[in-house]
Length: 325
Image 1 (cartoon, helix red, strand yellow):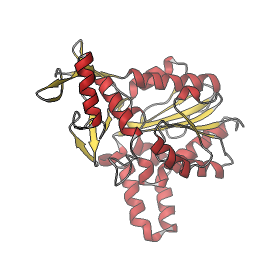
Image 2: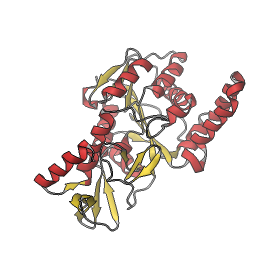
Image 3: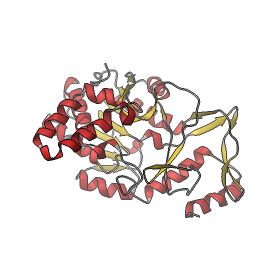
Image 4: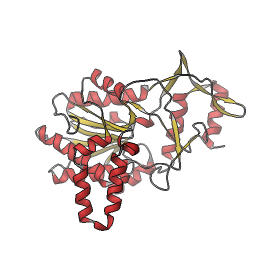
């Protein structure tokens, strides 16, 4: 029994059944605070760790937005849940080549990941939450951030909860499930309000669905494979698919302009990943096979290309980012 499971059992014994939202929040807070979950020795691999091309194209997109917005001098780069800092390092390198060297702000609570980010992006500034980031126009990136925020699940009109039954943790009801995420809505609303007030653009990249629909999308991943959701609390990554229609609605209500939802594969192709892959392969022929395999993993429909999607949120005064036409 994990230390967190013991604590959750005690909590349930004292308070009664806990919501899926409370369970997911407790598990992920413990999980991310105690390890680096990325890479071959971790539990999952994100797009920036697959290839530098991912972060480079994000950097090019943001630099282009900044240029078309009139090159405001006080713009900052902000990333929510920046992993090891790999995406930021790649994006900032491209921004610098475009004449943009913004101050960097990371919203990150994990001391383990903060240490990795400090190595990747020297001079970064860290914040425990978005509200502490200084005001001003922002270039914001959130890659696989929303999927880890806790969700609520409902079966009919009843909220689904976690109980202790038959000696273990169990859900108290099954049936057709509808999911909501107040935490996700709040995060998107805060970003959208900041952009509407101060200027800038945000790119949210995650796996999920373009249209709201019922369904159970809660999942656990450990050692790069799916695992039972209630097993080993705090020792595996819990996520849920992002409802991009809901994300767009929340952002509009907060006063921001919102792009269409596009698949990751299509977006990367529109921004020129094929040409970038060819250029890298010519420069590093010994890595050509690896580079083209990475491009396929990021873009092909049967890999990350269709499941992962992007939505752009921006100040009404800023141009729409490229790739969402």
